[in-house]
Image 1 (cartoon, rainbow, N blue to C red):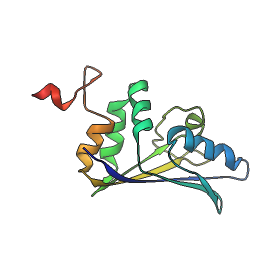
Image 2 (image 1 turned 120 degrees about the vertical axis):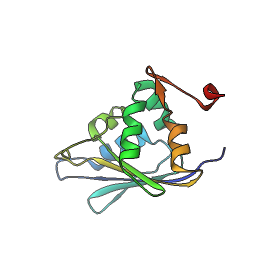
Image 3 (image 1 turned 180 degrees about the vertical axis):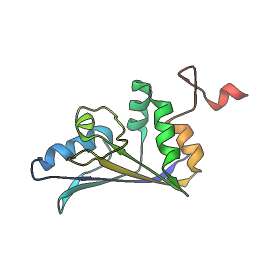
Image 4 (image 1 turned 135 degrees about the vertical axis):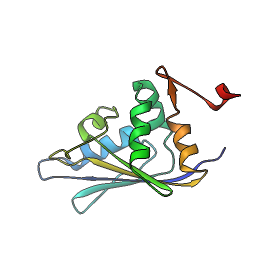
Length: 139
């Protein structure tokens, strides 16, 4: 299966932050992205979530991720926010509730191929008793 996605990542940079550290936080989670500083924020674009998916599996937060993705879905797009400090450490920590005072990393994923459901199943498969369940398990 060939996946065709566009990932837009933005994060505000406050006066008390170092833009390079925010860029590093983004690159730690999305290594294929090339963060650039623009008018008080860092922006990046990526076309793969493979490393992000590996982190979700390693941290065993697939169910949480699926909830975030499907809870913030609009048509062929889903979005989510991540905590900057955790991302700087290479850890996925979804930002829920009130935004951090320094702002969060906002990620918007538009899926061209296949469907959003199929793509989410690819990066964060459903689980059973905490273990990923693949399509092969149903056959």
